[in-house]
Length: 181
Image (cartoon, rainbow, N blue to C red; front, side, top):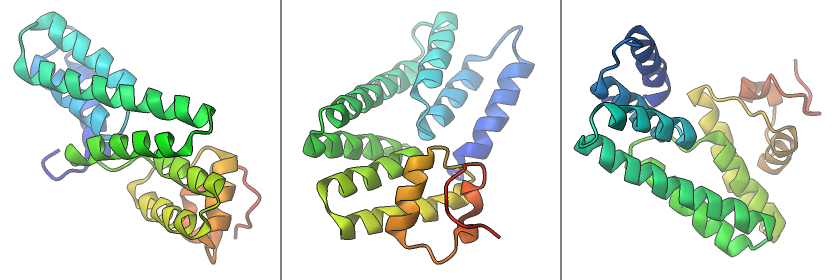
């Protein structure tokens, strides 16, 4: 966590929580929730924080983190609502707030959120901005995330004008139409 490598830290924290399942430590649960927040997993983070606060209701770290997670969830709901209405300006504003919340924790923006940005820019007809956003998806691939939304994967690959699909092998589990070696 100190190195801001939240994906591997998340696995470590989950294992620690599993080992302590009979008598979980509030400190372990708060660390697990921080990793979950830093990877954009708000529902699991809230669940973990509820468990921590059930053990220690006045834990300052857990209470502060809960406020951050709830704020992030609100921005995500606003984003989804705005996307559904095709209100791209509000959707972008909400997504930018989500990204700021993750970056404030030192986390990496989830690849799905980066793909949403590509989708929004394409929907608005901003092809150059969509291309830039698509490149950030490929840079993000080094975190080990996989692109699971086939439609968004195709959009990002076309928009990013990737010379070779296999260069960004994090897409290997999807069934998009791009060639592979």
